[in-house]
Structures are given as C-alpha cells and as structure tokens.
Length: 401
Image (tube, rainbow, N blue to C red):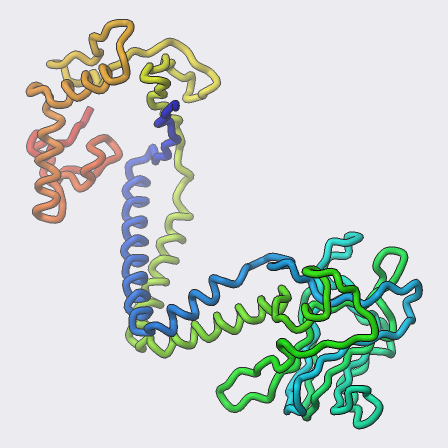
C-alpha cells in the first residue's frame, strides 16, 4: 500500500500578522476550553435525565422524508375528484381532547413528494357514535375552497371537548396521476394536559376504520395512521425533547455559570471577528515521501509550488545552514526508504548539530517555567516568537538564518 505525507501548508508571510493570528487563536482556544468545562459541569449536575433525553433525541432521524418503511394510510383510487371518502379512529372511550392533528404524507410517486394525497377539501368531526349518525360535532371545515398543499407540516385543529371517535372526511380528493386519492401519514387526537404536562396522543395504536383502504404493507395500511412514525410527528417529538433538554440544562445551570458561558462565547466571537480581519494566508504544497512496497519514489522540485509543473530531481538531504554537517545524504542509488530515515536520524543526533540541543533546552525551559526562551517551541524561524534574551541568541536557541 502506498503511503503519502503530502499536505497543504498555510502560513502568514508577515511576522506581525502571524503573531496576531497566534494571539487570537490562543484566546479563542482558551475561551472555548472554559466554555466546554462549564458545560460539562452543568451536564454532570443535570444527571441521568439529561443523558436519557440526549439519547432519545439522537435516536430520531433528521431530514429524512420517510424515516421508516411505513408511509401512512391511502384510500382507494377514484376516477373523479369529488368522490367523498373518510377515515376514522376509535380512541377507546369518550376522552377530553384539546386538538386534532393531521400529518401529511411524503411519497415520490408521480413527483408529488411532500403532501402526497392531502385532500383539497375536507372536514374534521368527532362523535361518540361510530356510525356518525348522532351527536356529531364539527371540529373544522375546509370545504369552501381548495386548501394549499401543506407539504409535511402538521395541520392542527383545536378542539375543546370530549369524544371517542375522530373522523376525517375528504370531499375533494388530491390529484395522483390521472386519478384521485386521499392519504394521511398520521392522525393524532391530543389530550387536555394538566398544568406543566405535555399533551398525549390518544389516537396512538387506536382502531382505524375507513370507507376504503389500500392495504399494501408495510408502506400503506390503516395501522400506519396511528403508529406515530410519520416524519412530521418525529420532527415535532424531536423539537419537544430538545426543549425539555434545554429546560433540564437551565435548571442545572447556576446564574454564575450562565454569566461565565456568555462571557466565554463573547470571547470566542471577538476572536473570530479579529481573525476575519487578517489577510488571507499563503499556501504551499508540501510533498512528503510516497513509498510503494518499501521503495521511495523520485521527488522533483515544483515550479512555484505547482504539483503539475515538476522541474529538476531532488536528492535526500536536509538544511544547508550548518556548515559543520553535510546537507546531502551519501546514499547508494538503490537505497531503501529506511536508509533515508536512518541518515536523517544520524544527522539530527550528530554532536556537531546545535539545533537539537537548542530545541531541547527551550522545551525543558518551556515545560518547567510555562514559557520557553523562545515562546514558539515548534518554530525557531522568522515567523516564530522573538527570544526573551535577544542579546544571547545561542542561549535563546533562535535560528536567525
């Protein structure tokens, strides 16, 4: 297998710009680290409820038209749009309700997509009579004019009353291809919640009847209407869980922590704003060794850094600024990649090489005192930090070539 260390390096040609970028980046990292530590402490204080809510949120798919194989319920196909048809749910008892929610389908048939089969005209009714012959209450009527396609957004109809059966009657069907249908992904009948409680879907798992139905599981069938699996329902559930999660975090967050998080966020934004004002960094393509089956490939000097414009071949070697050491490695023409690495190791550890001990001294100083003689231990070049004692460059270890 070939191995490549080729990369693109970005840098600031101006030392002052490089120093400013370094300063702002350090500020941003410090503020981000402070914010993360505060948030982790708050999450720990929130306990198991936060863990459970986070897991529930992550289990809900995001941005999917149909998160599962069930699409919804689908009436039989009609040759004309004005054929009245209906579907209803038995809640199992006469229960107090607050809202009837219709969730549209999403299907790719005939490029209809979102809102597939949602009726152009319809009415919502409730009753305690399964035949809807008596005690019928009209919850909503949308029969005076064609309604707009709702996409996959939930269509909500408030209702303050009690009922056992909920019926949706379509009086003008949606266009499918050259025919007409009525389809819904989900029908929900929401309870009247007590204070500080969330409304429950009383239709979940209820018995579904209809004038007609295309039973083509798992995509279409009466049972899909009350399974809680519609994309819209899952989206609403995710929103509800996210709001509850934020409430749990807010309860665990002290005023002092909130103030410190806000301060850290301001610091991050200010650092980002400062970085945005700096000139764009220059880039250079750095091509490392590419090895295939242990054999190093030929490396060429690139014209102006353009990988598509190779010039002369270059040989293994290193910096030429140390007069006491050879800068080119004396290797046989058939040398292996390991020979190059060994030659570099010998060059680095040669007693005549001052770069290693200067770097080591600087790092020891850095780890012992918190700051090196040169405060950029990875960069002793022109874009690195200035030495703390410029009058003693050998002690400071700064390379000024």
